[in-house]
Image (cartoon, rainbow, N blue to C red):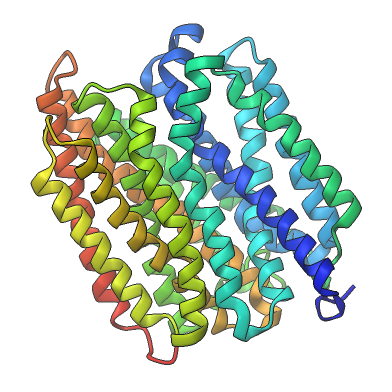
Length: 462
């Protein structure tokens, strides 16, 4: 069925199913963070190993996203979406029943496979079922999924872990995901158009080794330093493989990822801006709960409460940004967003200390989330609108790959300033940890300035 032939009721149902599935998959990305101490104790793993429950999930997404355009071109919408949700459910079940850490990690990787397919597919569907003049509204809806889910993860997981144990982070989402799968089977329509394409095994190999090696190298960098042989090899192999992947896509008649969309100047510009914006979003969402727990010695649940108003603000501003985009375009909205992010980061650097009040921490986080809500989806919509409809699946895959991969590297870079402060003492010291937090917020402020300067180059009509 063509997206143009959908009734309003069919379109609304597709939107509900699509956003629900994507929200759950993004929520699961960061949901385990507050459970790390308990998991470390139960499976006897250290902090570096347990971090792979999140890093492995994100790494798998980064690897799968570039291939999603091939899936969308080759298979029907229902087939791809149902398969992705099926993988997510399998991964959730494996994680729930895991009796060893490797099995738990395997479950998370399979979850990441499903999420890596669902995220660009969600954006492609929304772009296709709404006319161009309504795409700002559509991306406002998507923004509430992509931006809000990580922010509400800490309070939800903190509550669940405290009262029901860490396995509740899997046995509660499991039946919800099964219900969404059933709704997909009953109500999902085929809205994407298939076209002749073929899978290129060498491209997948280059993509997997490139993104995996680079991300592993940057993650290792925090623990071993740049001079360690494993870090050097991982980064070198990863960078070379990514370069070979890009070169091969340019030479293939039917590439699995149409990187030529980056030849469109506005698309390339917003791809870079989206990296900066996503780095800021997930960094601030990570730093503030860590500050409340490790610098102020509060519980994970309390840290979750601090960020909860910001999560609500992010949801509201993501939706408002979509409405504003349809009316005014993207440039002014994105500029205001980076100004707010910069003010929040600067305020956090100057004002936060061990005795900072709950209210002040909450306000600073709310300002950051308001800014993020004005940036992330509007800037992506600017880039997608510069492409013809036939390249939208590839455009969403490219920008999601760049955003996910680059944003993860940005997060690792910003958080590394906290890790360096921790490394200076044998036992965690709140005052020393605060120094690391302030350093991280200073770097976040510099990221916001870079994003602001880049956003000034967006064309007025965008």
